[in-house]
Length: 222
Length: 237
Picture: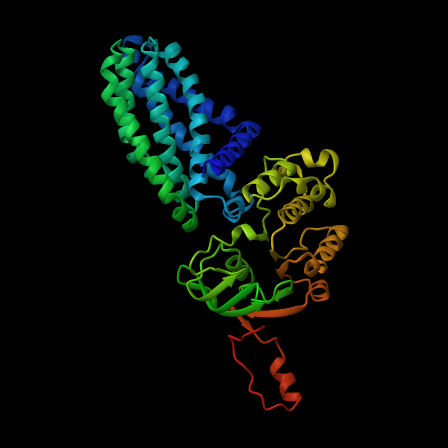
């Protein structure tokens, strides 16, 4: 399973590096979201800075949808999805590989967005361990849910509109917990973020486990 | 020796629509079988069933000893398929696609270079992304994957489509040498002259079933046989 996961993740990341869709489209999209929030709330940093955590995670959520859609778009061109099924790869390995590749891209994006909230909103980056921990655990959860629902949506003609409908309600706990953890870290009280980090870890473990079990049947049904 | 493929009254559905409606077929090890039939006859569906890509709803289906009713995925590593689409990743090079396919199927990667050269991808051509290849080159790349994988059963859907003359001849050579190479081939083709020249026999499909060839009843009648003409589904072995 892990061998297959490494193989699939390597393939997905190689394709993303070569196609530069993440760099040229998803990255600029996420920055544009931050800018638009800034425009909507006004230039006053006393308003923007306290909202930094929430705005950051909303931008991450929206970007996750694009990243997951891209992850399955590469499988739908030239029926590569059938090629993947024909390869006999372990479905759990495919799930872990695709989720890992999505997570890796999101973590790079989050690094850029972190700089963005500091520069645009005046957020003071403190509690680095909590910030990084929330990003890692939250991103794993988002990638697992996105990859799971992505395979459901990818087999349907209405995939572009269906994925956000399936994905966003399910990841509401990630938005809430990650925002709260970041709020505590940015407010200089990272010690109070432990419970929220626990929520993120439990969510990630739960959805990785569900994905390992459910991905195979969903891939076949798509 | 058990047959490489055995379907008995196999039914495959798309929703409630029957793609295969009780197909019966036996293909021996090393045999090259040509599937013939009008558009919508079920040729592609039959190939997908044999590849384990399309579930069998009822009936019996055994491929290379694997019972597809019990587990349709198990056979996939031993099957190579060439479909209407290339199954390749556009942003990977031809060589990277081969490497991924071989590693995924746990095949030896030593087969990459010979397969690339056999299909005209020697030198720099192997290092360009598939999306920059012509349709014919993409077809050749898919064939290179098929050959390098060394699958025991080849399932080919209109394999000559998109290939130039050299490519077609090369493909025919490969198919003609299948028995010696120990592989079984089932292929669908509308190129009747080429197909009948390389196939051991032709199987006719219509309405998702294996049927007697058109005109068969007339031939029997002219020959004065009293043998009743079998209605589909017919067993073709």
